[in-house]
Image (cartoon, rainbow, N blue to C red; front, side, top):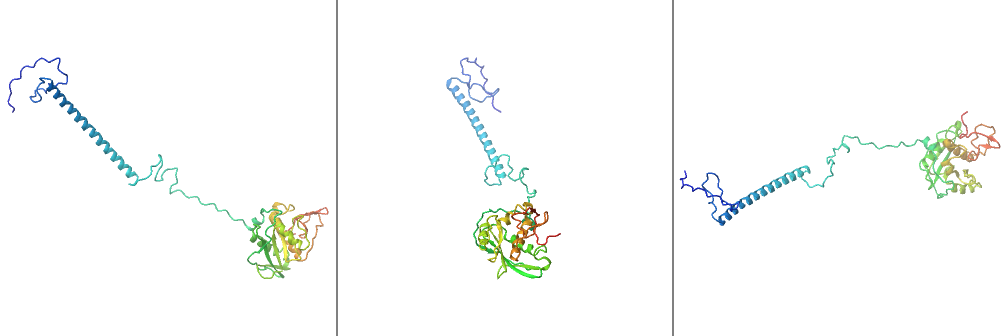
Length: 320
């Protein structure tokens, strides 16, 4: 135990002129600490000591705040690195689900729409459809044989023919070839009751060539046989040549006498009529009002001849 020191002299009255920040205060009952200020120097030293202690406190407070800020920055950086998979990525817009789980975006469990497939037109639909072609078109004048063959299906006298299509028409050559073969060998046509049959070839020597050509080229070939097709834009059998000329404008657009709803029948009539000329048949007019027109009547021009109006007809032997 500390030795008891001399008795403390009674405290002097407080100096009303002493500075308030003097170092003359000590803990109650304490014996250590700076002596009471005797002059200005000790008071000044006590103030500096006190100020130094306050400065150190503020320094420790700043260091602690900086440490907390650093720890928070490290935690946030670690969280960002974890969200980004540890890699550096571009900032994402707010509200965007980077994993694609947003309900408004496509997810894996949604069915992918199937492409719409357009069903191709049937033969009948193609034959009933009009195609664009100018009434005064003059194409290349050069012909190309439609490849392939079609055997004669019937009995009787066989005619072998080739089909040529003028280059640059833009029409379906295969459709035209099929229409010719099926029309001529139909029992309602010239092949009725096995009188004759028709076979398509693409090479060799045919009996005649059925030619699909532009109006201008059709006119040139028909003129070779003394026929003028330019007035009504019609077809012809160019008897002085090997070609039966089918006017592509009429094939594509039809005629007002049949109307747009009978294009299929008009095209059948066109084939039967011009091939009928090649087989030796001349024009025939209708003799009974309201009856079916003969297939050898010029139905493209009119169904009313000499005041007798008949109905359109595509066949040599139409069903009764």
